[in-house]
Structures are given as C-alpha cells and as structure tokens.
Length: 159
Image 1: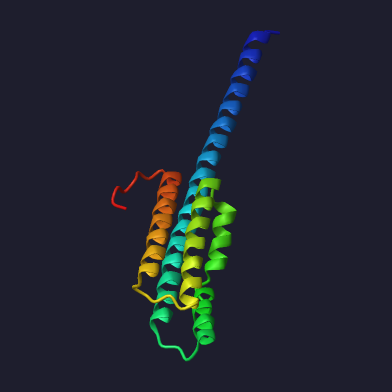
Image 2: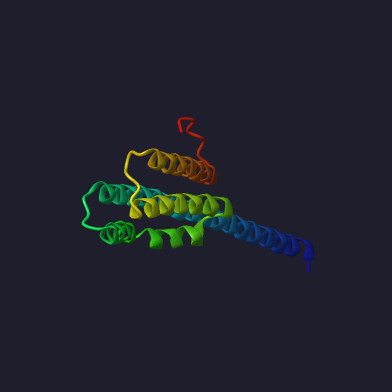
C-alpha cells in the first residue's frame, strides 16, 4: 500500500482545517473588538450628553428664585440627581479604560463642585461661577480628548 498519497491528503486536510480555524478565530476577534468599540462609543456619547444635561439643569435651577437656602440646595441637588448621571457614570466605569474613566471622573467632580456652589448660593455669572465653568470646560475637554483617542478618532483641535 502506498502511504505517501494518503499521508499527503491527511496533511493537506489538517493544514486546511487549521487555516480555517485560525481565520475564524481572527474574524471573531475583529468582530469582538468592533463590538467593544461600539459599546464604548455609545457609553461615551451618553455620558458626555448626560454631563451636559446635568450642567444645564443645575444652572437653570440656580437661575431661579428660591424661598430659602435649603429650598435652593434641595432643588439643585434634585436637578443633578434627576438626570441619571450616576447610572451613566457607572457604565463608564465598567467599559472605559483607566485614562478615560479618570478623565470622566474629573469631569463628574467638576460638575459636582459647581452643583455644590450653586446649592450654597453662588450666583450664575459671578466671578466664582466663571472659575467653576472654566474648570468644568477644561475637565470636559480632557475627557473628550481621552475618549476620542480611545476610539481612534483624531483630535479636534478646537477645544
């Protein structure tokens, strides 16, 4: 019996099966990476949008008239809580890489410092308010830069 043709056929089949398995594995990895990128993009978009919404909400409350300091404090804190920022923040902590999470956390804390300032009576448009706004803008710009870098998107160059 001739063993060479049989051995050649088996070797060719083994190489073909191995190549197919490797190609399938590589395709699966690409799809997983693409899916992870889309998940991060969605979380980043929701987080940035919710941060902006929370900022607008607390600013609107701070512009309003309040009967007492405690009423203003409660209204500002409720406006902040009502945006769902804490939930979206947890999503960022679950899917973001460390640099993005750190930058997002700083943006969150800059907004929380602004919330606390409005709650204690800082006037919108005052020098103190402008300082908080500048800190928040810097934190948001750094967060967006980290997010864009993670997503493989080039810098905007306009912030």
